[in-house]
Amino acid sequence: MAEQSAEPVVVVDDLHIVYRVFGSARDKGTAATAFLRMLRRQRRPSVREVHAIRGISFVANRGDAVGVIGRNGSGKSTLLRAIAGLIPPEQGIVYTTGHASLLGVNAALLDDLTGDRNVVVCGLAMGMTPREIKDRYQSIVDFSGVGDFINLPMRAYSTGMGSRLRFAIASARSHDVLLVDEALVTGDAEFRVRSRERIEELRAQAGTVFIVAHSMAQIEETCNRVIWLEKGQIVRAGDDVPAIIDAYLAATGGEPMVREPATT
Amino acid sequence: MSERGRASRRGGPGTLNAPGALNSADGTTTATAPERQGLLPDEPLPEFAARHGLKPSAVRPPALAYLKQLWRRRHFIVAFATARNVAMYSEARLGQVWQILTPLLNAAVYFLIFGVILDTKRGVPNFIPFLVTGIFIFNFTQRSFIIASRVINDSLPLIRALHFPRACLPLAYILIELQQMLISMVVLVVIVLGFGEPLTWYWLLAVPVIALQSLFNVGVGLILARIGAGVEDVSQLIPFIVRTWLYISGVMFFIPALKTLYLHEKLSYLLQINPAAVYIALVRNSLLESLRNEIGSYQPYNHQLCQLAVGSKSLHITPHPALLDHCHLVVPNTSLWLFGVGWALLAVIIGFFFFWRAEVTYGRG
Image 1: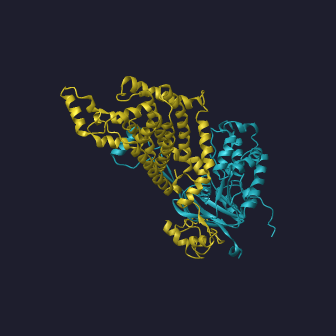
Image 2 (image 1 turned 135 degrees about the vertical axis):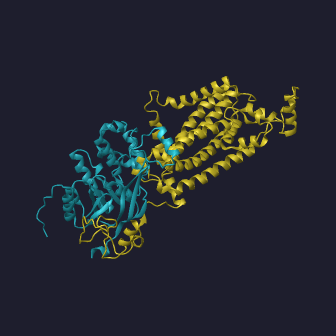
Image 3 (image 1 turned 90 degrees about the horizontal axis):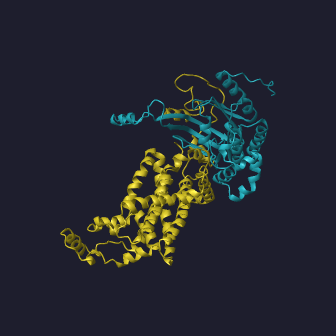
């Protein structure tokens, strides 16, 4: 079997992730209700636990491109963050070689700072040296295509510009394990093509890529393995990408994929 | 549920490999697939991972490695602090002018209340430089603490998006406060010179004092950052605690000259060796010649003589003024330096380990 010689790069062992959210809508949120609660010795009712990942285990090998699919809120992005080591697990462990890097930072950037400062600060935070940043600064800015806006605070950016700059910064460095969250690959058609090329490039260097996407065509095109999540659990996972995608589309009521007849 | 999941996962090739999957025990067979499900090997995962040299991703590095990582991100800390500092005033019309205006207004307010209205200047020869020094030094610690207790929760997006040693954040924010502090020191120098204090070599001693104070702030800041990350309520409470501390640290009065403490030398001693009072006293002693002369004119503290002086006063007998000179308990400068170093080291060591131990939990939110 091919698996015998495969080199595992990411091992996820019975992972549970729990978010604690303060201040849900049920509480009226006045001082009086808070005080009454203390008198009655109740726990804060407004603390809600969101069990985002409920016991996931899998192994990914070098050279794998793993697609993660599922409805909104099924825990796809959370899973990626956990693999990147950015969210501490409630239970279970994620094992990786070196560092997994998440490409798809929703709010990594500092809104009140100018674009060029963001390039420097975020690059440094990712562990680049000032020299590396200096060398790559121009290519980052060119790739993002924000042009003159680079000298304006990022809150003046359009959503597309912001995510383009984010992508440009995050992809400026090669990564051991690359986690790509689709949320990031927005932007116009031209940028989508460019970012797709960049992802391919990074994948060639990285060895292992995880991709979260709602576009099944993209998953089927790029991935050799798929994990289908539902409510934080794995519904199906495996190498048979088309079968799982079909099952997923059938379960979610999506249009079935139209494929060329299998060329085996 | 996890017990069950674990059992089924370790059960061998025949069992389902995706623990907790919808199809496990409760019969809701959503998708039972005959193909290799879950991409799992046959052996237990921790052993499997160890055999292939994989390491847990969210695991705390050893303390020394953590220090090294921090050192490697020093450029990030500085760049982040500078960027934040610039952004802080970018909305204000006067911009960076506020960096100088803020300490000046601060000094003005305290002077109005404690110099004019309440008149606490008793026993202090040159009150305004004395007061302003105290306020600026204390302000540095105060702001560092308040900001450090919020830093983790304020930076959640950054923490959840990028990988870096989390201690960078409190360090960066305290660095911002240090920059602010150094600007205040320029203002302070102008005020101190303007009120007739001479420029002497003693001034250089203020530099190591501020370095020690920064270390102390970093240490306590790290502790507060961890506590504030876990319990949001702490950051609400900190301002009150710090304000209480302000009033007992001799910011707007001279502790040895405080009449209520004349006969309570232990209490006076304790107040004077508290970290804030130590750093304030050291800076004052280095900058203010008038204060050094005043302290030099005191007689060594003597409880009996002082009791005589204070006691005779209450009997409406004019005491011998010389007797009152025995009433001022002044902690000598050498002790102050030792305490200054001690507090700083203690805070930094405890703070580092305390913050580091919870490294992987930051970001849970």
